[in-house]
Amino acid sequence: MQLIPGSALAGRRPGRTWYAVVLACLVVLTGCGGTSAPEDSSGLVPWTDEPAQAAQLAQSATFPTCKATALRLPRHEQRWGGVWNDAVSGFFMVENSGRRPCALPRPSRVTATTRSPLRVGFEVGGLAAPAVVLDPGDRVQVQVSSPYDCGKPLVRSTGFAFVFPTGTLRVPGARMAVQCGGSLVDFTARSSGTVRSSTMPPASRLRTTISRVPLTAAAGDTVSYAVTLTNPTSTAISLDTCPSYQEGIKGQPSSVHTYRLNCGSVTRIGPHSSVSFAMQLPLPEGLAPGAAVLDWKLNLPSGPVGTGQFASSGVTIE
Image (cartoon, rainbow, N blue to C red; front, side, top):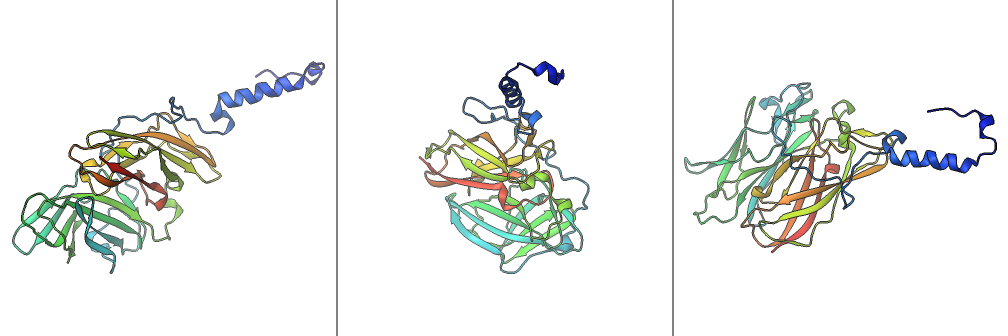
């Protein structure tokens, strides 16, 4: 940039100089401390079809893997047999009772036990959840879901077994209908409120809202909607380590998909700024008609996931 001596400004109209500076700032937002976010005609950062692979969601080796002997089942933190959207579900909490932070990956196998020798396996591959870092006292919410009716005789579970790299965690007394099999649908950290800042990735401070969800959608169609990430802090949040997100219809494992965020278009979110992303959710054929809930969750590459990363909206399946 060429500097103009003060004497050279004599006789000039200073307003034009300032207009040029303001215009340059608007054109190059990142150079003026703003947020660079290329948008499509709808004003949203375009959606990209980039499914997130488990390898891309791998937890940093900074923290050791949680030992199965350090995992505890808090009392009164289980719910089994609830029915939602033609599916039966159950959830429970797992707590890190150790003295140090550790990383807990998604279980590699989930099995329901019954009164008979029958063991019912649950699908885990559809949930590309990253390992979560747990400080002492932090918890992970684990949820399984099973179709409500598949034409088979009723079989109730007596417990579940979750296989982790360091051992098997058994959940006795977990009773729900399992004759149709099922899936692992949630594996999300819940902070105890004592998480140290060293384990919290910057993106954990983002807040999430969902919008533009249509009132109705048909099975087999693709639902287009928007998700807005807001940075409520006074410091820019980098997306150089690109997070993934999970979307789907609550209680419908076949509708759950995990994609990477379009960080190629947005590398940072400025202080007190928001960026809206276009989203697409392909609905499976045969989805039961009626009221449903579209869930969206930001998956962080590492660290606990707080409630600010969740958003949901109602939609009617026709």
